[in-house]
Image (cartoon, rainbow, N blue to C red):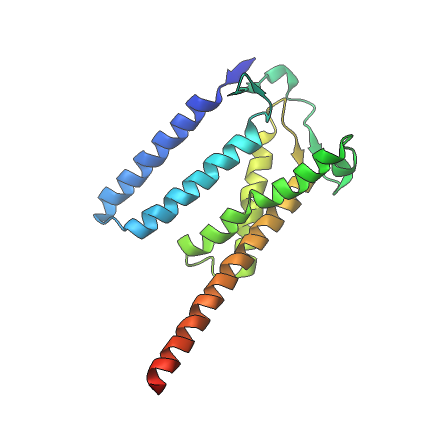
Length: 190
């Protein structure tokens, strides 16, 4: 069995992020502060997703428990492809309330940040597909870990979160552009 500790994993993730951003900045010979700040927000979003989706939520003396990789326990794969079956199996109703909003909320930032960062993700359906793709990658990457399970419910709820995030983004974009039109028409009248 291999134990993968949380803090070193996050450090490796952070170092890789910084190296990639530095190489791209050197290659492009430009550094756009606003874009880098949005990319930093996306990094934080991904780091939080890594923590929540791979490492056990329980802690031991305030420390995050390691992720366990045990080749002897990979099979049978823990996959649920029937929607909303596992949600109804929770013994404690608090677990249901934590699971459903939690899975939705953790993808809301992705739905907001993705269309800001990537101009090609300029529609509800594109952001929905990107959120579903991110969630699917997480579910596939969880397969070899004994303490994790891949669940269609997570895919549905995470995608719903990305959709809600895009809705928030679109609302603020509409308000911003609507507010600018009012200011411009008021200035022209005066």
